[in-house]
Image 1 (cartoon, rainbow, N blue to C red):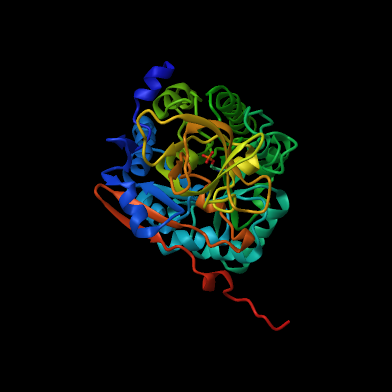
Image 2 (image 1 turned 90 degrees about the horizontal axis):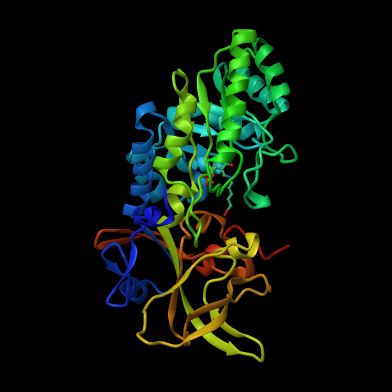
Length: 427
Ligand code: LLP
């Protein structure tokens, strides 16, 4: 597939009509008039469209697609995807709470993470989740002991660390030996072979997730081949058959000029590996579904010109969207209104937070920005609001879901009162 072909695929539902930015059929200036800025805007159609692409590409093997809650955990987003057939991949008691709130069936929930606490394990057992993705032997012992106390039996996948380089940012690389995630092959084999000692935890699955924003099929294939060799070895040498094979998430999204594989290309590349395998396949996509589905609208408050820079100072900050600060990530910036023949200038687009890392773009050529203009940071539907904080005592933005020509606030802008909830002035 060429780059051009790829872009023919519909990536999202944000576009210009008569120079004005729309989401689906809603002109965003209308939304701003009503709600102010900053606003996270999501497209229902983009969310469901991306899930459908994966479902379609993999329909021959009927996988369980567990959307990775951490990418965007708003209840309306979760409900939308679960209603369309997704399960959920969770990593904390808080995410389990969200999953239960939207009535996701326990049998469609998988639970990963290296540090599950006793309380979190108990809650997950009560919710009858499908699988714990176990990341260490002490964790497996703990899950077994808790299940025994509760007189319940649980299913467990071992998360394998296959020592494969996904060629992505260091902070989102998870499948190399030096990463804290997963269990090496040798230890995993020992666990499988001695799994009878876990009387209340049935070790019946294998899980692998090597990283995020992976742009080509090669690292996936390398990891999955190693995993399949391992599974075959278990079967041939030990007579152990696994029931679930969880292939994780990690599919890249387009932020600027990347050319990541489409759902179809990914399926074509990896499905041959799994031919004639009887186990249930599971996927945990987050970014692929959510990233293109959201943008962050913000207002330029001031334009400050210095001897060396033009700073466009906006009303959203790194507390609202941390990816540029944290990973030096590139995100497109689109004006709310395109002006014909507007001059182009080079800007640093920065937030109001008291940190020099508080930027959205550096030395970026953009349509001239004047105080009062609005801008959108594109591709912020994944790891946007879900990584937001209250740093500098800033209220977190509101979130809005657009569906056709209607829009709905799915999380209110925080109030100052929200900021101090639970605090006491008397020390
Ligand atoms: N499964 C597991 C076990 C994971 O750790 C993750 C992501 C996923 C699935 C979903 O991965 P995805 O399909 O979204 O690539 N905050 C970073 C990304 C952190 C990813 C953490 N784990 C960012 O903004 O780039």
